Length: 125
Image (cartoon, rainbow, N blue to C red; front, side, top):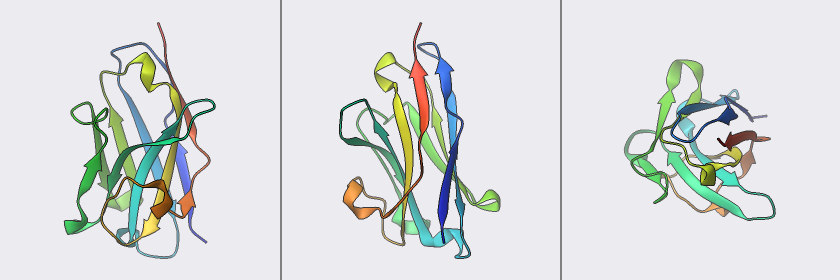
């Protein structure tokens, strides 16, 4: 059964960078999974950050992430990386990795049926 294992969260200062990793552990080929990152602030709904699909499925970013964050796939490690730069206090949240089989990169949480446990990111001076 596929599992998503997030890592890389932590406490940083405004303007710093942080790299999150989502490892997809499964017997199915890594390329079959479209993987996304969502964040959730206390008491709030999930909020889309970025998504990556294999090949022509492309990538997608939220307005807030566009230009500051970069999502990429490390095929040898079956992992999706979220590089976060110029972090702001508003980026503070639990970040979740989510996945679905095939399909283009989309921002709707309902389209993802596999979820990780999350990793905390705190941006504070």
